[in-house]
Image (cartoon, rainbow, N blue to C red; front, top):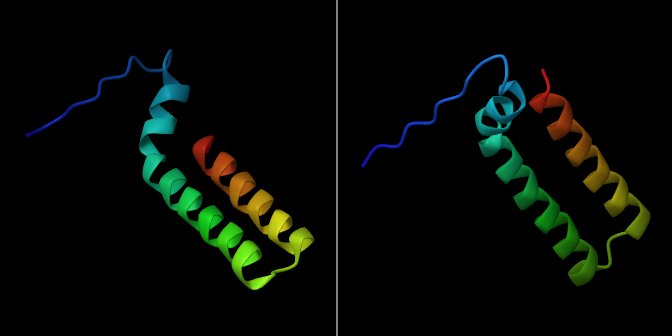
Length: 66
C-alpha cells in the first residue's frame, strides 16, 4: 500500500510543514506522556514537569515553521 500527499506550494506551506514534521510531533506527544507519568507515579516536581512540557511544545512548534 502506498499513500501520497500533494500540496500546492506556497499556498499550502503551513499544511506541508505540519505533514513533514508529524513524526517529530508524535514523538513529542510520547515524551509529554512520559513526563506526566513520572509526575503522577513518582511525584516529580509539578513546576519542572510543566516547564519540560512547555519546552517540548515550543521546540516542536519552532521546528514546524523552519
